[in-house]
Image (cartoon, rainbow over the protein chains, first blue to last red):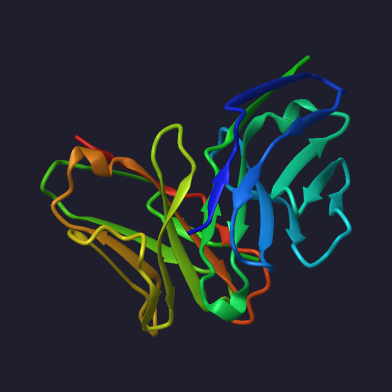
Length: 117
Length: 114
């Protein structure tokens, strides 16, 4: 079974600075999807960024980018120019390829990110 | 332009009562997933359904919990004879049939057991 580990329960960063959130995962599959979700105090689950394992290029979405290291099974999230609205819980998630019919997301424990003004 | 709709937003039940949580997927989505989030934890998969079929219920407790997604109407997660340990946030997500697309989440139902 796949597992996802986020080793940083809490992180903090100064507004406008850059922060990196860590995520590692364990799988025997060669193709899969990885996601970062943000959960603000309102408790919504908001998709931040996604990465297909077969793509070597790291995904980027505006101020958010990932460092995907497939061999190391590492998928870190970098937030540049941190803003107060980035304060939230961040969850890393894994999903098997759709052809296997196992489309459930496997989540890490989360990292609580605090932005200091 | 409705996203995934869950209701109620908050549900309070006494021990031994039944809890029914509803989820209407996004328009055009035929796959529904239920997840549970205990306090200060990540989301844990419970069940994956398509219309009238349970595809994967590997995360569902064997007793007291059931889920359905009928041909018409919302998906229902039903918890019978609730206990204190059932207190959690329950999230529903949906995705299209051709599903290399990410799942879209509802705002969750927070279940509190007195």
